[in-house]
Image 1: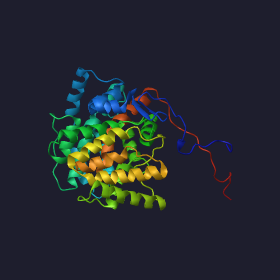
Image 2: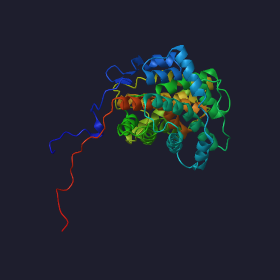
Image 3: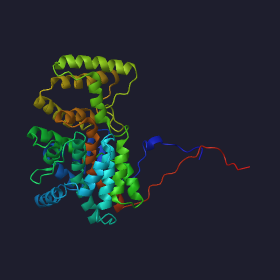
Image 4: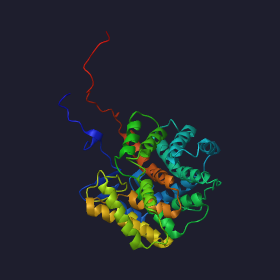
Length: 379
């Protein structure tokens, strides 16, 4: 196989077909089942988008009502799952908690080994329902705060924020959070989604596939950029009494020096988008509304300064994580909780791909080109 062309990282390799979503690099568009994601973020709830990704069509009123009833009835942590979370050290990353929780939920599930389409959908919906409680309780226990029980009178985004902070969020905050959940819900054959499909191709169960996907997302080359963005802001220094103009000037100077030092700055560029991440304008609008809501002009200055400097020097645009990170920070989430929020949202996309893979399965087993020693023998 000496002349075999190697595609490192499977770059450019089309591994399969999918009807779940499409990233069109040429037009910088992202479609969920054919719908532009910015239109969905403007007009739909997180629950509607979840049903779209699972079922292929936006739900009717009756379908949405039925799903809302199911989702709201499965939001609470079981006593067994809460005990497992309590046993995990608060020194571990919250992604470790999400990964462990997904496995425990699978082990507990009465349909764990039932891979029928009906059972798969039910497991996906219940996992979507409960993962916010995992994320929120883990954040609270790290501050010695009690579990906040979910409420069935709140929608998905409202309840997520309720469980995190123990109070109802302002409508503007709920809306910005809803937008982020929709934008993070799906993104074609990325590393974690492909991991989930590879695991599913072995005929492993849905929760095993999601557990593996969470493990893939934990890696800093895939997830975690939203966390890294806020660490950059912290390194710069967040000065609440600073004007937007002053903060922007400092940020540009910092970025110019970082680029001169060839420092890796997260939150910019994307492997499939050539002209900027199509999700950014929608998420950026949500961020700007939060900056106004919380009256934090210095964050706007840091945000604009870094982005302008990167664009001027490298013509590299922000990706979704760049506006998402400060948005979550303004809402009050701990920085290590940002990628777990990504997990809660991406449960939908992962499980949609799991079900699609299982419906037309073929074991994913690529070849390799051996470059070790020639055949040899023990003397």
